[in-house]
Image (cartoon, rainbow, N blue to C red):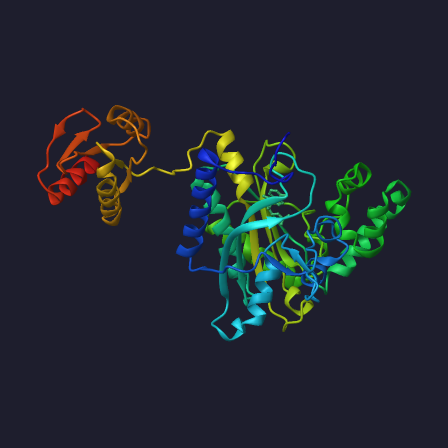
Length: 423
Ligand code: AMP
């Protein structure tokens, strides 16, 4: 009998892997919160229609990869697990009237997302993203802020060679002419394109630049680039963002065929890429301005911009480069004891130490003191307190084996604090 397994593409993370993910998640919140972004914790599922309208029913993410929940008989609204953060966060912004707060509203979430994709290293069916959204500001300044925030987060983790690929996808004014130019470019090879790409050619040729099919990829190499087609306002916006990023210390690489192929995207689009990493794994994250999305999901037109950085891919990159995630364990004290009768006292002392801010655990397994000390040493404890059957304490410094016999609880706490300080 094989027993139960974790679902395909969904992982159990424990030990060093769980510690690394937690460290990156903490660093993400710390970076965003220090920059004035407030946490938003939104539901893990939304109405399917939000994604169908917000991301687009024809995208792979919705057409093929959405986890739709089987509805309960009494529920009439179909729900789906969220494949990305933006639609749900913007829905929350609209629902809670955040428009009346000072703009932009800066939000951050680090959370799990779900896509029924073909699993491989760096691509999972449940994955974690660090998402930042700044809603309610149309100016180029917020673009600079958001792009710099993601870039410096990755740099501070130790991924110092991350590249920021930058483009402008124009607006509803200038994009149609670009789409027409692209259509004309791809039309001669229509017969070589797959069915999906032929539909893209007709409905949204920008998405052909994202195609993974060999024929489309080849043709895309000589496709007209976006910058030449931008209207004056879009070109000026891109210039301010580029120049501001340069002053802020973020070198961008112009990527004239980088698109976010959905209609609601406008102007700024970018990706965080690790050079020299194969396939999709080097794609750590990406972002864009999505000024058209709020109206599409039933709100008042609201400019907004955000990024998503994949925590799992960041962790893989750190691991591959042997970069420590900085998850430093606190110096540990283990409270051992002789006789079952001392277990309550061991737990009381451990709890007391933790209340003073020190890491501590009681040994509660029925075993001899020698085995308890071995366990403490294996866990890297700096101090061991032994509770004697008559309630007296002895304290051992694990660094040098020195033992002392504090007479009361206050002197135990003082001695432990002194040992912790020495490490
Ligand atoms: P996207 O929302 O597709 O632009 O993805 C943004 C980032 O999320 C990517 O660059 C990846 O780092 C991460 N990501 C997206 N899909 C997955 C997945 N299936 N597994 C792991 N990470 C993912």
